[in-house]
Image (cartoon, rainbow, N blue to C red; front, side, top):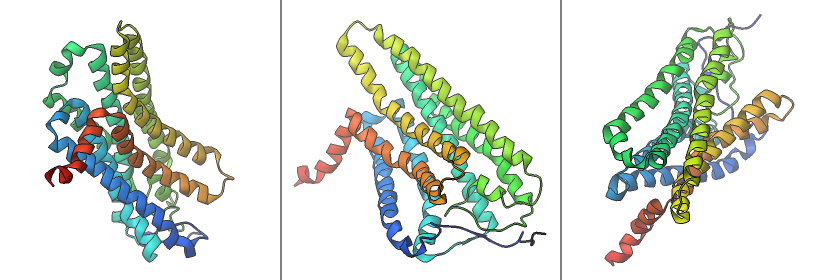
Length: 312
């Protein structure tokens, strides 16, 4: 019979068996966290400050950067708390709130990537109607829709976490709270919490990917019909950054899913490492991709950092 630990706080876990090296492991993680904050913060600042970037494409990019910042700021405090201070205890309310924001922002990211694909679809397939379709009001509506869809879809499983009794070991597998990690500790029927996330993933993340995929098939068909080689290259170039971000996000999703489903005999540290890659790699890479591949962003970055010299 399990000991009832319903009121006991959960215990977060860093890298099991590597506790003595936690301070050293925290160094690269801290570097990545700071890079994410600086990279995405810079993107948001540039898009707000540079009037040349006041276009739907960059507004959606700002949403992506804000989402990446949200994921980072949600996970960073508990991760560094565990690695630096060995502060493992987390109350139920704080844990469930963290899980809610982590899962909601993952769905938001998928939705923003879909919105960015829609932007490229309109820009390339119906360029003459682009400004009339994607008005500022429409961009705001899309952003609110993406956020509402994610927030409402995750809410049922998180609300249920508050009602479930916990009478198994209260040790979690990561340094942050995930729904699938918490629900394993429940001592009641968890069929709903097992099936519902699968439905959400198939109905949203997978559907988003399929729509993005077929959108780009139509985009490529349209581009190949453009007579001018220079115009073809210009049209494709506006999509390269977005395609790279899509690959980074969905490859990490597939990698994490593959490890969790088929990696039962894989060392636990591999599962933990894949989780960090899933949460840190896309937010780290997205600003890098757009800074390198998007001319307007690159010019804005160069202007930002050359400003002190020009004043001198």
